[in-house]
Image 1 (cartoon, rainbow, N blue to C red):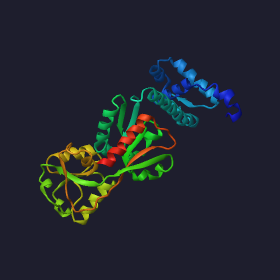
Image 2: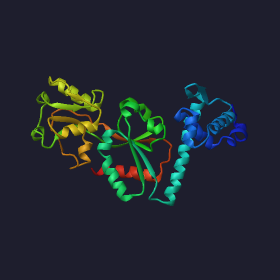
Image 3: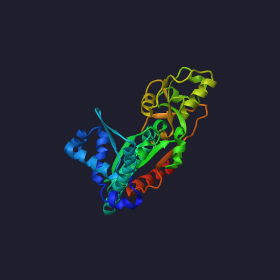
Image 4: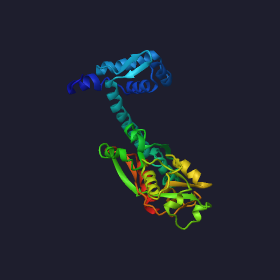
Length: 315
């Protein structure tokens, strides 16, 4: 293994970004043949690039098996650190593009479904009006179940989500979080529903209601289950983590949905829903903006985040 003195002679001058790029493709696709097709290279050229990288580092990066390739512990370390290096280079290119054209660039946003149905549409609408040439790549993530994988893998610039309790410790180590607003859990039904015409509803009166709720291990689901049990009522009839499904079902028929209040708060008139006045305590989990610590965000990302703060303050 190289020591600091021979870094320049043996590694700094010999490890090429192209070879690292080839390694990423081989690992992602599972074979050198597939990587060659993907990169427009021969399998022999791919093999030579991996061999050159292993020769420079003097460790095996891949194990060759009949089923393809598997990453060694050394290879995993190169991938982990290499992704960060490539991400920083990509950020540098994007920053240069932004400096030369402040209206352009790209933003990668990962968000929980509740955010996508709540504050995000208003933020995007306002952002696109001001910066029509910036490309937005928005994809769904579930930090409640998987944590902040999108940030650690550097596939997202920022994550918007409600506080995921199992991953609170993760926020203090490699990530930084900012509370945009507190999102009260509520019960809602279609504006034309018989439930929407009730001035106030006691939990016991929900015995015959078709309640669509998240699972009981979520703040909203737990609050509803506890309140119904205390009133001698069976739990929700339908359990689903999908905010979209809960919203769609509550628009019609007898369904009552357990939803983040931000869906109604940030989208007045967009959904024909009405919050029900139900006499039960509901949690108010914080809606978070999460980014990597010690990572400089590109100007377009900074502008998007500032607009998210603006929308959160105004609603």
